Length: 519
Image (cartoon, one colour):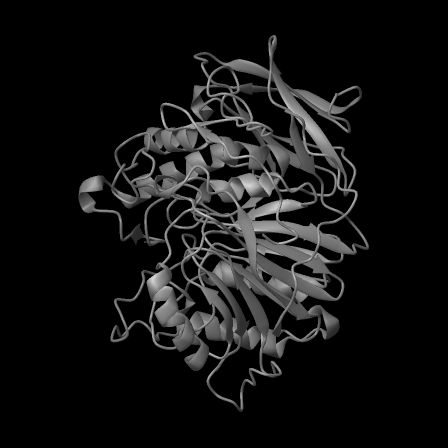
């Protein structure tokens, strides 16, 4: 186990296959009572943050009190208010707690009558000069494929600024359709608004997921399984005509997502817009993209599909593409971190048309923009990617196999770097295929510096004024309730001004981190 790996006792299995708290592990509230789905926060700004909970076992409009304090005993309240929830919003509570101080850890709670929620912990974004930031990066949590050990380990880290979730927060399948470790509610594939709400309710009963939300603010975007597998603007591979109108389904999925996820809603969010920028002082701009729903054309059928190389083919949509370039052009942060869904780097012998490989004109335009718009020491771009249930570290370059364009030893010609996070639970290709493909990728894809196609876990992203580092943490066994031990698998970094990956050593946690929220 690596020096940066937290310790903890294993959770136990309850008779219904759920989780109960083991010795030394506070797993949040039991799955009964007023606040059985826990608490959450998200989208930190310098003076505000979004707070979330759900009121369970209610059948009428309910007034909910919320409080924010600098101390976990709530001796002094620095912000408070009331929020009314009802069946129209599935009894969720989502509000902006404003008037806060930048770069500050706060504790929060909710009350209904004599009932008080678990204590949550959150942190505002910094402003001005920032020396260092740390984020956990995760994606792809198939409940049916195992236990959420990665969330548990993330929850134990006191020094995080936030958790970046790149999508596939839920999965839409029926029980035993894709994974058989745990069963879903509802047991059928989810199609309607009620279905999607029930699936979120079911996910948020998981103790490890609850605890990650309770201890850290989340910054989220969606991928395909929040609606249906291999979704695009006008449909999805996993959507049949017999299942109704696609727009009805995606609007239901979007509404449930807005109700249950602690991101900032706008009027445009009702039109499925999730792309936005969160600023962390002069060090980092987090630019969240939607490469899944907003503007994506249908995936090409394969290498012979005549639409594959069309100049008008888009992954982002014209408006989001223009918005992205505006964000990059105007950013004064040292690191521009693009948080998005599907892998940007080229694969040498596999065509996955769901990735940027399937939208080559879109990728070329992005690379051309980066190459043609240098901004001194402000052109450091890091791409964070989820979706493919595996771990990768990539230099991003227009033609990685052309030595006149890209030198893999020095990084000459590399325009940005990409860190791909493993899945929380969703299956990779497995150890045997990993052993076959890894040496071939090393031989034929010099821009791919690291790959692991089988293990599950998360990334620790550590950024300072000189470098951006990703460390891959893999958990022992998501199939076992006792498999939560983690280890550092690999670390890579890019030094500011190089846009090139080199091996590194996982950074140590920050000292003097504010305490975690008590149970």
